[in-house]
Image (spheres, one colour):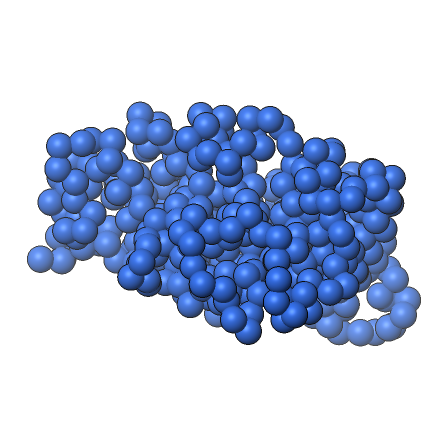
Length: 382
């Protein structure tokens, strides 16, 4: 172990993911030099094509609906920021958390979750579609930046964190990486933490985007106890503060409350379990979580957002149009693969052809999918 590598791991808890003890990469490479293994992962992710595409992929609102709404890119950056703060508080590996956060949505389809759901339906006879598994496929196979291997050749630990969910059938095909889904063991604390940083980020920024869009109101948000309690605190602290600034202050306090609760609860669980190594973490129950009280409040918030924002009639209109675009593109490409770019055409194997179609559609941005649909189906495009 180099002295430089020891410096990267200095100060980490013994049960954290130490870069010097990584389970390595699929393809052996020389050491990362002045970077840790996880910093190298992060840098490869940031320079990937899939990462740049996140700028034009939907969170809740289609990209062209407004310049200030979150995209998959801004969401990933927010997850990384929250994750690093949490990791520092718990003496976990910030670089691994950052790499995982920046990569977790690389395989997401255009048009948010509706794109994923429709593509999964289209792929039901060809192995289905899981966006976490697609993110792994992106970093393992689809990125083409290096002469020695396909993909980004990331470390086991970063790949483990990307794969939050996985069906048992797919897990059996992933070797060591899928074993925890079969054994029902846990990933690293960094992976567990990133999963909840993701939840903290989207719960809070969806409130901001929902209010900015006018699809939900402050009066409606007062129905959510966590929001109402902290909004009253802001009003008491800053009487007469304008609405937009009062909202930002409230969201800031919500993020603070969630992160503080997560750190306190997780620190207690870790102390009780007393893991000595990362292998002890994998054998333990989940150790990164909210308290029961905070979990109840976050569940109530998610239910509110689902009922009042994600299923708002204007969002439903977008969902229906997006669903039609994805389904019709898939069906057209499957019926006539010659419509695809040459790199995505497969001869003689319907299953491989369907998977290449899924790769092509999942890699599209919102606006590219809209344009591609027009090129194929609009009579104005000859």
